[in-house]
Amino acid sequence: MTDWKGGLLLHIHIAPAASYEMEELQEARLVPGRGIEGDRYFLGTGTYSPKPDIREVTLIEIEALEALAKNDPPLQGTPITLAPEDHRRNLTTRGVPLNHLVGKRFRVGETVLRGGRLNFPCKYLEELLGQPVYLPLYNRSGLNCSIEAGGIIRPGDAIEPLDD
Image 1 (cartoon, rainbow, N blue to C red):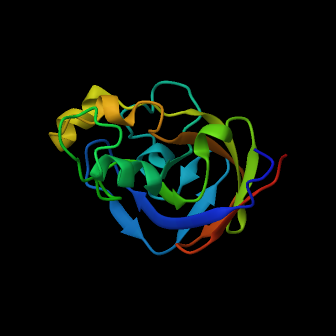
Image 2: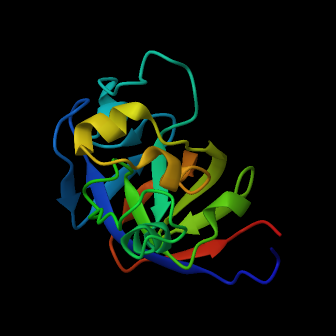
Image 3: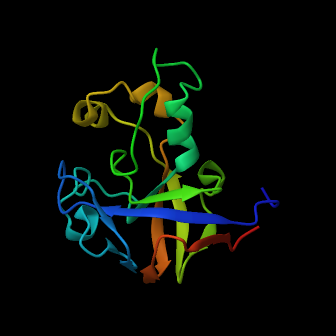
């Protein structure tokens, strides 16, 4: 993965509690050990908040959403359109190989994140969306990260590797 030079932050979303609609932000403050100010995991009101895990910030690739819209691979019968506010992840990226960033440090704007573990789709997301997304999102449902250095991020910020 040493050839990855960087990508782009497209969208920032938060929700104040589990099941609430995601709200798009034009700027967000990331706080180490907590998450994104105002988000359900920062506030401790997320579905998985009681379960210890790294999920201060969650990311997903726009390329995964584009593949679903093309029914690629054809796992769900018909194409599925998921908007960036539908997938329940905080940050939507382009050109960032999230599956390769487990355990790696990378910069998003003025912040530094560390990839924790891959995020797996859940039946809860299928229920919320009313669409069969579990299988098509398997192994491409994003990355849970911790925040090593906080700060402000904005759509359009560069995402750059810090580890080889």
